[in-house]
View 1 (cartoon, rainbow, N blue to C red):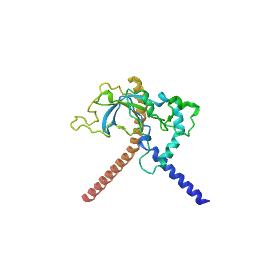
View 2 (tube, rainbow, N blue to C red):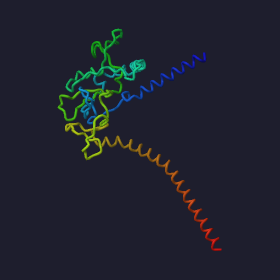
View 3 (cartoon, helix red, strand yellow):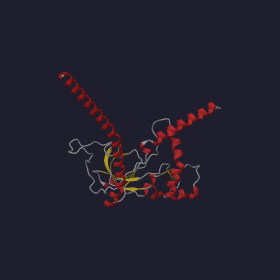
View 4 (cartoon, rainbow, N blue to C red):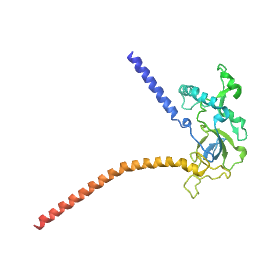
Length: 260
């Protein structure tokens, strides 16, 4: 009986480790992007290019809150089981459709997957979305990004999921111009009509008000670190001062004895 309990505990701990590794994967970290942000994007001919986010749409805007909550509640366990059963290192991700920027209805294809024939269609809600399809299991926390490739015509704009392996932070896949006068990662071809970048609100006053609490928290953390380091330096300084005083007193005693 104790051996069975030990085996079960060991199996659970191994499953927990696999689950933690899956949660720490960059594509499962629910990366958040913003309008006007620069990024690196992989185009349809497998080339990394500079790009700008023109617009952002949430799955709830296209499928409704019910479908998104259903996929996030029921799908995570199935998705983890699928990844755990896969012996290779590559994760089995659905093949994503290429949706052009003008194909507004095609954006649903990035959020849907074929529905198994043996699965019940609850309340015929899936028929309302698309016949024979269901929301993907990983739509929770995902954004649909309208990507513009810098320096290319707008006809090449396309919609890409925020958890897609085709997008990466800026300058992690593209190269910085060698002859640039700035060391910061500036784009080589700027999108002139790019929307202004903001985090919470388009108003600068509201944006600053949103950032002030975060800046205050960061400054407080830095002060805590500095205060924890400074006493050590002060103690070392006092120790060195004490050593200097003792050495000077001993040298004065030696001088007195020699003069006597």
